[in-house]
Length: 323
Ligand SMILES: Cc1ncc(C[n+]2csc(CCOP(=O)(O)OP(=O)(O)O)c2C)c(N)n1
Image (cartoon, rainbow, N blue to C red):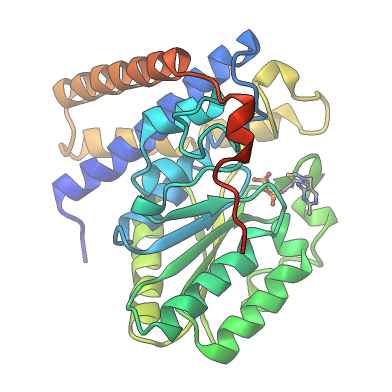
């Protein structure tokens, strides 16, 4: 089914907003005001955008260290995210977590984990809770190809299949885990096939195509809601910037510049924008107005973060879970 023009503009706007937020974080990171490691999502925007567009607010997502795109696409509040990166009390995790620990339960952002593969069993447990409570909610887990090297991935997938849990596993194969290419860690192209295609819906798709991601996720989410069990979607994409921090902090030499350049030319935001312009779904006026609105929103979020109070020593004893 083809998407309506407004829905396509919505996908584009979400991707563009994630991109511009990442760029601003990147350009301000060396000021050392954000006392947190950051893992930028530039190049992967179509995945969070397409998947979250297929979800309801009460569906849950769990994500990883490369968390900003997932949080924003699922409806997370931008000022609260920026305040978290500035480690302020007004942050979405009250300044305790930083970039790798974003939480916004009201919008279904159940948490992001810095432990590679750590979110996979948590998202699986979330699916089990939905099933046991007879809720028609779906749990989505976002993780990288590096996390698919971990035992938690296989254990979780097995359990989800056994119990027919409403979980969608979204692997973002960006080709690298820090400085190790996928080819040196996986036996051939086997991660997708481990999806046991006879028992669960699994797909390997172009993760830079937001409409394809959306359509595939929608299929998986509908299956989960109907009680037909888990799905596995491998989205092929690329991490355009360094693993962590800003560009100048990324070690040189582990990636071929020609590889980066080739993927830059396949930039999901630019490609989708060009497509919508060519098809008359977008025009220069809407484009400029959207850029202006996003820039103002980012300015306001950074101002809010900078002006917010830092947590105090006494706050250390708040929000503790004790039973
Ligand atoms: C259990 C664990 N092992 C190692 C690390 C160090 N580490 C942080 S990110 C990362 C790479 C993760 O790669 P991937 O899952 O593909 O995600 P990407 O960074 O490519 O988005 C590693 C090894 C960690 N945080 N947790």
